[in-house]
Length: 171
Image (cartoon, rainbow, N blue to C red; front, side, top):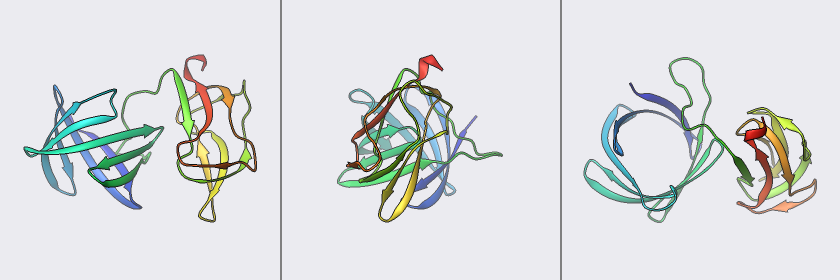
């Protein structure tokens, strides 16, 4: 049975259905097109060898909560898994252990809504940052206890800077 995703890729909505055939083999349907896909991890599940319909494509993936940064050759794509009701659902491995939440973009932190020791649920607002003159609310990718807050209001952050840590095992 296919797992269905709604992805916001480079600002556009993509609906994707993926069948796991086992041993790294998948069938993916994107915009009505079906592809045979093989995915092999090269390292710690960030660098992969990908074959799409027999053609090899080097790919690197970084996942932070519900955001994926995908590097295909020299091209970089940002995808956000959209939560939705109905036939399309967000699926994937549960987030467990220590979650190190990093800045998804370069900007300035304007509000910090949590402190060490606070309990949070998945999707709770954690902080607000301004990037490209827009307020962006950063939400928790998982439930747990805040163990570290590395930023405060007024701090400038670069994409990838550590902002806070959540211990999901103390939820």
